[in-house]
Image (cartoon, rainbow, N blue to C red; front, top):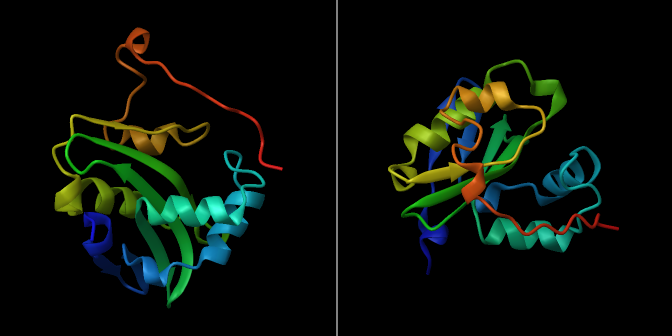
Length: 153
């Protein structure tokens, strides 16, 4: 059993809950949002979503047991974390839920503390992530990537 399978955290604020319990995730909702409403995963197949969830530390945001948001962290639990697939449904935005989610991820999960590096990619949420210490690459000349921008069909 891996660390991913044993980490279960729950945080509550009024009628909202953030949980890392994968059994609570609404895979249909996550797939629907990512494949239809996100700019980064348009038309992503459900099986890819399922595999990404199985191999990541996931965070569901819930309102009265109904999932309304999501994020996942890809990590070795020692030195590095990548934050991805972050969303809050449009009807729940503007209530500080994204900030609360970031606080839980970056400050409340002991296994995610002390990493040498975190990274993420965003086209439109720079101001949110800057509040949690993210900046443009300090040494972009040292960073490389291998990208396959073929869209999901």
